Image 1 (cartoon, rainbow, N blue to C red):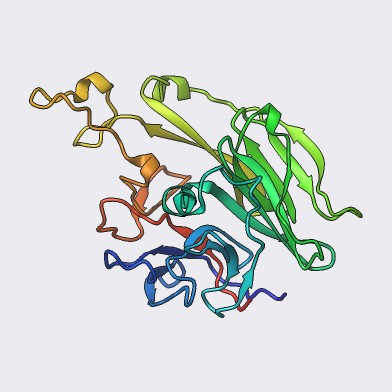
Image 2 (tube, rainbow, N blue to C red):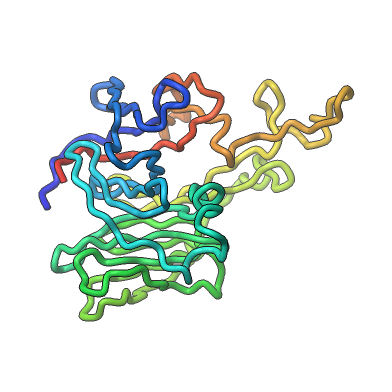
Length: 296
């Protein structure tokens, strides 16, 4: 598969409310937004759970997974999730209430024979599973080390899977061996210089979310500090400071529900930030995804 070099586009929700099949694509190079109507074609109410190698990983309205290219309309149906991976609830309940939370993230890589391998973080507590498109016994298979804690992020780096756990350990998995099952080739815990972070972001006011990011050919661990409670001026405060004397209801930051999002660029050199795209919605839902425009 030949990928066309291009700058990434950011896939955002439609600028029209209640339009689940339209997406806006923001080009960083052109600083311009494009709108694509009926972007998922026959995948009605598709829910994106990952973007990798120019493909989107989406779930249709029956929770069936697919690989899909919004630029070429190419589509590859993946096997349905087996019952032993899904919660023990009726299918109708799963689709209506759990579909958007079942897959935390998915990534795509290729083996030595150029077969598609899709890896997902799924379930609660979050675990790893994979399927290999083109395999005669194509199905979803568990792997990883769930007993040592749940996973919070995965990334494909140098055609290997790096998985970040809640306890701070990073595992590297190789899918290019002689067997169809992945091999763990290393496990390590990055040493972080927290410096003044404990003073600037005390645990009673902030939560931490960690990510694995590739930038300029390097694999980075990025920590994001999220204010648990924010007042009307955007200042992180104690929960008790938000108690309204009239209704005594705390105003909780909706970050984990994709609320309070801005779309901008942060400059690592001087610490400045600027708005990249004006979002008029109260929250960005569905969440945005980066994608490299390719003809898959």
